[in-house]
Image (cartoon, rainbow, N blue to C red; front, side):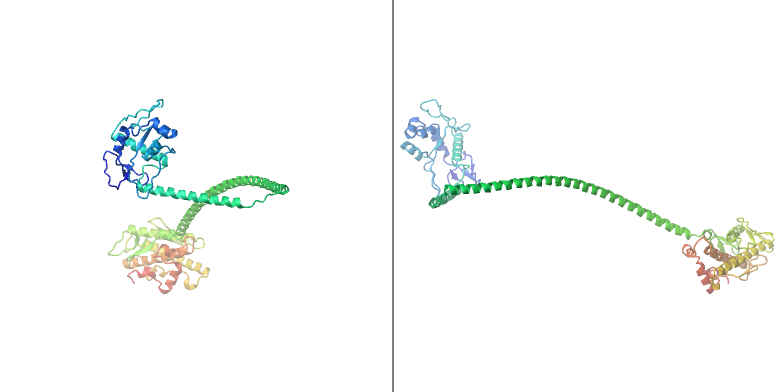
Length: 510
């Protein structure tokens, strides 16, 4: 058996074996010749009982089945001493057999299936020659497997192994042997030292005293053990109670956290609902403030201007030669103006002496004087002779002037400074507004249109005062809701600087 690195000729018919330690491939050389020698030269390796009985009965009983011939001239690895494999016999034939490297195979060890050796019949007095079942490749495999099995059994090391691994294994075993020898030496020295020590033998009385003392200590220890066991039982009982309490506390804690999570969820839901309600309240309050700032009269009767014309609800009041406004539009504008003035006058009754009554009737309004005479304030009329129509417009101016004087008296009652009391921006005298006659007969259309425009401006000022002194809307709301309409206080201040205001300044007429 050689290592893979050696230069022995390799038989290709023999399979490769692997070292069980380093897993290197091994190559077996010379196994075929020894296998043939084992099976054919039975006279040399015979199992005759007489030759084995001469050496030893024990050796003969072990070698009565079969043996394996190993090469005597096998090269030894350097530094590895051969290990003896023989039995304990001293006969010359046994020594010669061992010298020829016979490996004993016990009778109980049967060959592998298809092996080249048959066990002899145990009943025969002398064993007959073994007949090989196979030869060649199969016998070589059988020989090697049996050899490795026997070596594994004897050495307790998995075979085959290479020479290097065998050397390492041998060194390891030698070291173990040295360790065992050192231990033996140490034990022997300790034994000698103990044997050399002098022994003090106690007397009978001292022995009894020592015994009693030890027994007393034993009783104390037993009593202490009993006490400790009792305390241990009490502690175990208390521990069980604490475990029960701990379990109940865990249940309570779990229930608490469940309730806490439920409450937290409800709290978050309620907070979200509250926030939503507060947001709705805020929106509602903003809407309420917007509604409070909303003036019904100002929204219902927006007064503004369109070039040379004054407008109310986008209806133009007046006519020009180049812009002949339809009478239906003029009548509608007068109807809106009469309805607005009538509403303001009716609100302050009976304090306001409503001498001249306005009868709003849509596009066909009428004016009633103090004598209950009724005049129509709608057209079409004759541009050169319109006495009733002129009388109705004059009565409207008179009613507007009376309402302005009533507003001034109310401001004086409220202790408003005289310079801030209500005054019309355009002075009204009889049938004239700022020296422009409101009558149509024998009057230019441009002057009549300008007088109507100033009349609407005065009506708008009266509306500002009315809103600021009633529950319709706060004074400050007018500026934010309608940028074109200044507040009452600012109107009073601007009136002192410019009595005619923007409405008059926007007109190109002077």
